Length: 130
Image 1 (cartoon, rainbow, N blue to C red):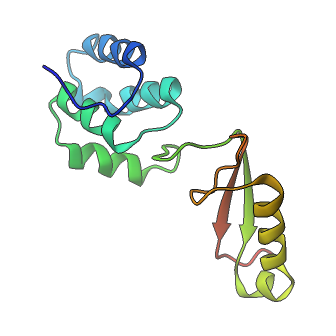
Image 2 (image 1 turned 45 degrees about the vertical axis):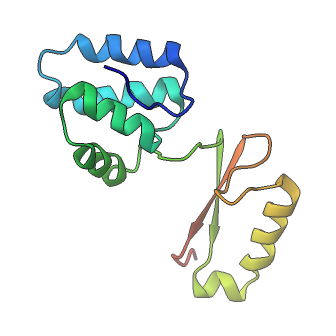
């Protein structure tokens, strides 16, 4: 069966398929499967979620629901280091906007929040940090 894997590494896809095939009950092991996939790919893009859905026989919507529910799964490439920038009211009036701009400018952060070198991710938080 051929899947549209949109440029994902074929060797890694084979490794993932081999891992999935070790489970008799794939549904009961979906968290382990998703962890393994994220470990080898670095994140879980939609194409990979569909690939996992087809190999496990689970609906893609269920896979996506699990990925988006748990904070330890990422649908976007993540940097090695996470930078939290508080955007809550108290932080904003204390200059968090300037901090955010300096971070983006200094590290050449793209629209997804990943720095040009792939080391840093920005995470914007709307909680006030006191």
